[in-house]
Length: 101
Ligand SMILES: [Zn+2]
Ligand SMILES: [Zn+2]
Image 1 (cartoon, protein in one colour):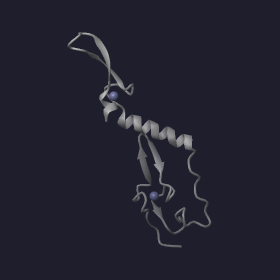
Image 2: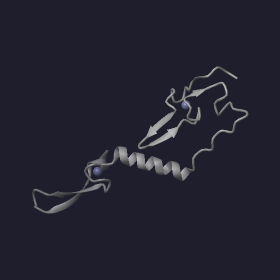
Image 3: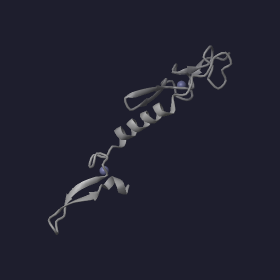
Image 4: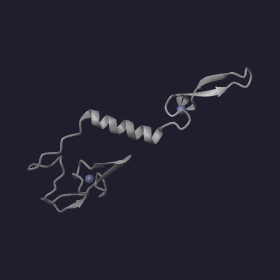
């Protein structure tokens, strides 16, 4: 038993905001503090650590978050944009600027 302290992992915020989801801190179990009756998962003896989320579920979160944060506003993820070539006056498809970055 130790005195409760603010969780060093989440800084007392109880987790991390991930897009429109909220991931509860795995270290403190989403309480924002550790110690006392809430031992960190790594040192807990009388409390099973929470199981990690399924890999596919974690991947879906990451994809949604990435597309929400980094979605290209020019090509909307298609990686190509229509462009009128000034010289020949034809509509051509060119790689989007996001491909180059
Ligand atoms: Zn925490
Ligand atoms: Zn793009």
